[in-house]
Image 1 (cartoon, rainbow, N blue to C red):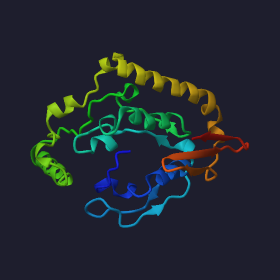
Image 2 (cartoon, rainbow, N blue to C red; image 1 turned 90 degrees about the vertical axis):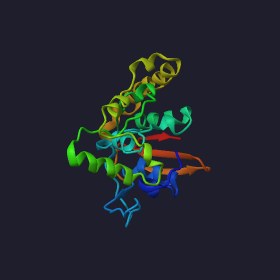
Image 3 (cartoon, rainbow, N blue to C red; image 1 turned 180 degrees about the vertical axis):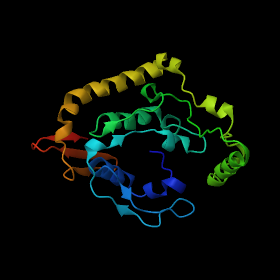
Amino acid sequence: MTGETHGYYHDYGDGPLDLLARGFTHGMVFEGSKRKPGGAREEVRATPAQPLSALVNFAHNHDQVGNRARGERLGQLVPREAALLPTLLALLTPGIPMLFRGEEWGAPEPFLYFADWEGELREAVRAGRKREFGHEDAHDLPDPCSVDTFNASRPDPARASTPEGTAWLAEVRAAPAARREHIVPRHGLLSTGKHTAQRVGERGLSVQWRYEDGQMLCRN
């Protein structure tokens, strides 16, 4: 969604919708590969299909957000209406969904990398963060061992009562209700390795999840 292709994101810049489709149908995209200095993989192998009913889906977690240089959530990187989409996809696809620290109301606060290291380890972590994000303006990176960095990472629950927070929360609450009706009752019948997906134009996907009794769940 952000179009980033540097470092960790290198593998996802080529055909991102096709990779997303594979994630939806197979559960994982890559396996068993090592990274070169700079983030690219030495080898990329497609993973075999995994049981979707045993996997957790999420748009944000402590790695995907906290390991960014400045801990931005998607809401700070893409238009707000687009930022809600991956949250709803996590809630309305067969994998087990997870929401992360205020994501349910679209919390805008960052989730920064923080730790309470001391001594030589603290200095090593500070230096390592600057090395890792050398492609960015690293001179003002948040100090990973500062209490201010920790405090800046706390979502403010009061934002759930703002007009934007209320609208976002309403969408998120409606999704589990639909999930309980259409997905959860059939969770144990979900097949493995039989799901399919097709591209719809340049920016769309159609995905079909299949069940052992012959039924199918479709999302476009």
